[in-house]
Length: 125
Image (tube, rainbow, N blue to C red; front, side, top):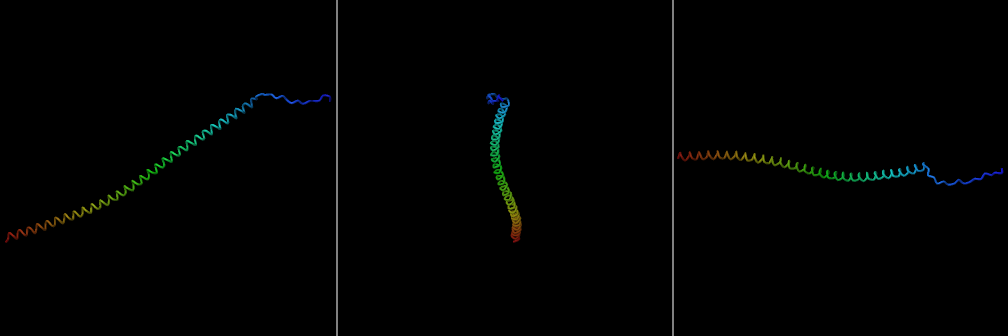
């Protein structure tokens, strides 16, 4: 046993292993990929928020237009009712005028008879 085995510390070798390089490149590519995905997510969210705001504006204008149309419908209904009432009133006035015309004819006939009788009475005398 004269020879004793001595342990020596291994020498540090500054070598770049291919596996280490591939792992580092993969880590960087994954980080860049996540960054791109996050950017797309934020951009899509902003675009969707703008679209939602635009749609809310359109819906508000459509609701306003609907109210205006309801208002016009109500006004048209009121005009139709007024037109019907005016038409009925005109028919009543027409009926009254026809009755007055008939009464006027009757009075004219009565007056003509009276005049005829008066003129006959003068001739006879």
